[in-house]
Image 1 (spheres, rainbow, N blue to C red):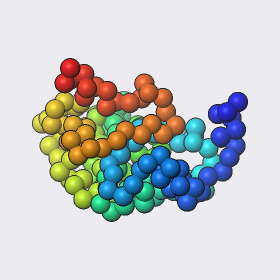
Image 2: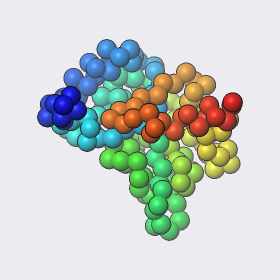
Image 3: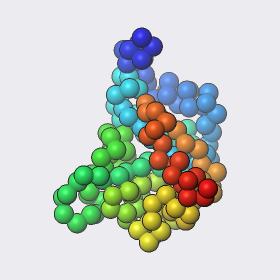
Image 4: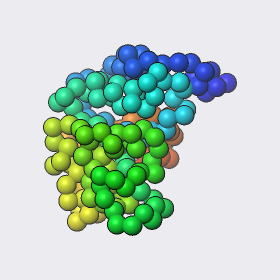
Length: 166
């Protein structure tokens, strides 16, 4: 019943920013966002407004990272700039924005915004996925948080990094 009620509610970017701040998100933070748009409800401005709210909440000194995996896509050679992600409309919308940098890993790529985006995402293929030194590890070392936005814990790929360290 609660989920249905939320899907009928309409959210604005400003309301989302207020919710992010109430959660403790502040300028300079880093957030890995695992997301699904439809459970969020109606957002005025669509996925762009969700991305704008995240970017505004962390400010220009913060970082946002989305998994941008390209599972089950056979569109020829991988191109970080043009190969779509299969991770949903929010990361796919972010992938098309100039402030996001995408890693070079064909199936398990990430997209990152922020002052250290390129350093976080670089050399992903040579580092592997969910291993020490990969983008998730680099993000964690910066003190990043994990946000599950409209998804359940089973969608949290960052747990694999912990498995590597265990």
